Image (cartoon, rainbow, N blue to C red):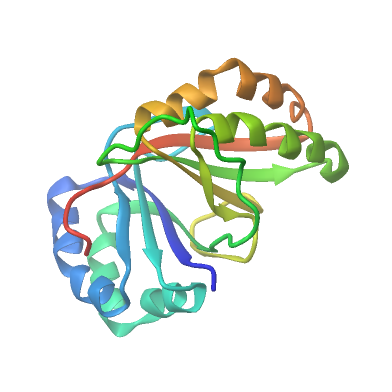
Length: 210
């Protein structure tokens, strides 16, 4: 069964007030087994726009991710956030289909992984397909795997593009290197004019799970 993911993008307007929200969320996350993969950390917006703080949290499945958001425990905590931050909040179904080809020369894994958080509006579905094929080789070269690749999503707050993709890399440096590399940049030209992208590369989190 595919995992479920929370993907909030946040602009904090009152850092001190926001701390109350962060302190109130662990009971909900622990109850629903929502493990933090990204929680702030370094980031680089390489295409489009993104808010200043990014979070990625993994749940056992999509239904559990939705249930946690709708739970009394989380909604109580959410009240602390609403007054102190603006948020685009996406809950997405994970990917359990084919992955990029593995490569023996892929970069080694670091304690903190790297992630591409991608939101896409595809304007030419047929024209977009060559890009989807061409990006597999550079993803494999840099040890990437899909966590989310389209699929069902629920925009619970704010707004988002119609398609969400999350790609995990062995490290933040590998995630940046893949994007900047010649293989991916060649693939990227195939989607120019075919889709609108917001793409932020973020550093993973290795602190407390909940």
